[in-house]
Length: 325
Image 1 (cartoon, rainbow, N blue to C red):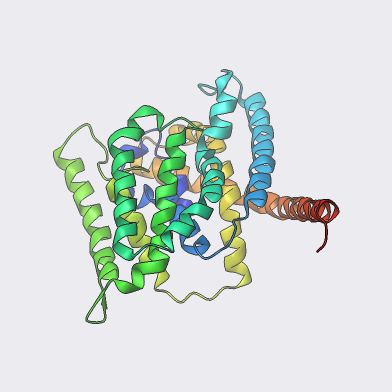
Image 2 (cartoon, rainbow, N blue to C red):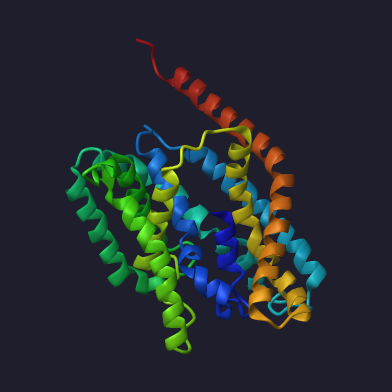
């Protein structure tokens, strides 16, 4: 799903008007939500989340991204619109990281959330999730959803986390005569959403995509559909899959920083929106993947070392403070 996150960002510069983007917009808009569903699905049965390690990951990657952005800004100062403004470093260094910052708070909230979901029945817990989303969609999102560190992001992503956890606990119960109803609905919904989006793009001018975005209902349905379909594949864990999965975090962190640079190049190569969108996405994803490969192993070692060191210090402090019975 990393490629969908990159495509979400590379739609700038005419990409939203390309037929490729319009056709796949419902899927592109659901990438981040799938990651949140995965978090809920796999963390519902854990007694505590890896909050410390996530915090260290945020701090270290944020430091690296700011450093990279400072280099980029010094090289392209005055050549690209926005690079000579003070707020550029803040916006391009952190704005795409709202998901990672929010996930930290979602992990903290996961302890009471997991407790609630495991002790309520299928329909009551679903009602609570839907009611929370209706509150978000009707009221809270209109306040300050698009700001980096807004409470709205925490509230919304927590709802998606709850949805993933709910799927883990109850999706196997959605059966009728040995037919998985959610699986059937998922297979129908994804192509239907793509067709509807193309149709609306054709008949209603001025609006590039109605079924696109992080927070609309269709994106949630699409994310659930994608996740549930892939959960049916019995993919065995191996070293390559694990590494590719771990690379998703640095790719997510880094990709936004390179978009305007490559957009400058792409705009000089072609004026065709479809070709420009494909070219920009390919370039940004490739360079982000390369940087992720370079950064992954040293960052992983540093973060793991510090995580283990801090945990060992905490354990020693507990042993020193508390009296043995």
